[in-house]
Length: 383
Image (cartoon, rainbow, N blue to C red; front, side):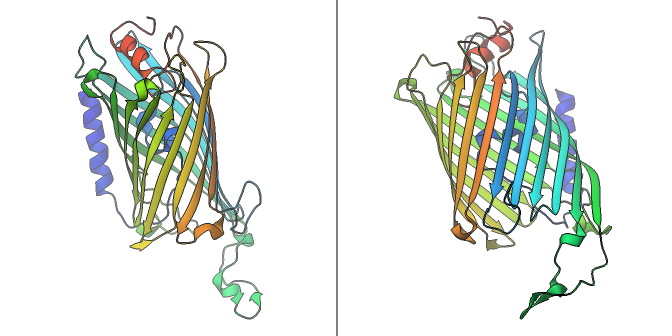
């Protein structure tokens, strides 16, 4: 544990010492609750089972570009699992792949990598109550490849106010080009079960992306401004049970900063569980406001509405599926002339062998309450 804390502080110190002159922004998602691993590697193994999830997002369909998958599209898929060794060592491991397409597909960024999280659950632990505080430290290492086709791009010296696109450009690059590089992320996650009574949950996360600040120049430049800016992510979620366990609600806050770009997502989640004996919370409604600011100016902001359904693929102890859809409705900046953004996420979680409980806590697909109590009291996953 001391080594992990020291390593985390070392990463923070190195990241703050690296140059800050850089450009570019990362993709973002509308459904934080279904894409936590993208924002923070400390979520690896968070569900105490084996998870496979995939997300497709298309941004601004009215922008000129490919009709499918869309002019600005992102694919993301990952697998992660929870490891419990002799009820004394708890960790999560995962792998992921991602592709981001910009414009007419001329600029494509592909990523593949691994993630790891060390879970430290018995902080403030008492045998008669659930663990009150759980700390997780996560790391993500990945390989990236940027591809561009220079011959299909239009440059400013080809534009004529009267005739549109004319002639050829004086820009010297031609053909296709690929830039490869490695990168590294780190994060921590703190979960609080208030007073250990399973009635009020709080979740606080912090992550740093692009710690290595690699150069992503497509022209061979080595200037500091060609380095990929580090991204800082701060998240907070909370839920309180209402209506005798049939309704949960709470805020979600997600803040991102990447050089001159700032984004703040604030909203409410509603988790609806009509039947108390249902082992999963079947319906999640999310309403959020996204405020984007770049270089001190208001950027395109939006209202985001998400809907997620979860269910069992069979009887008790069966795998759990989830289907989430979301839409962005811009109201500032470019507005609805862009046609907004749309997102689809599908996933499945396989409970660990011997698991005997599912979740009354709405964040986890199966039981953070029962499973965590058993695992962290040294009883494995059997009741």
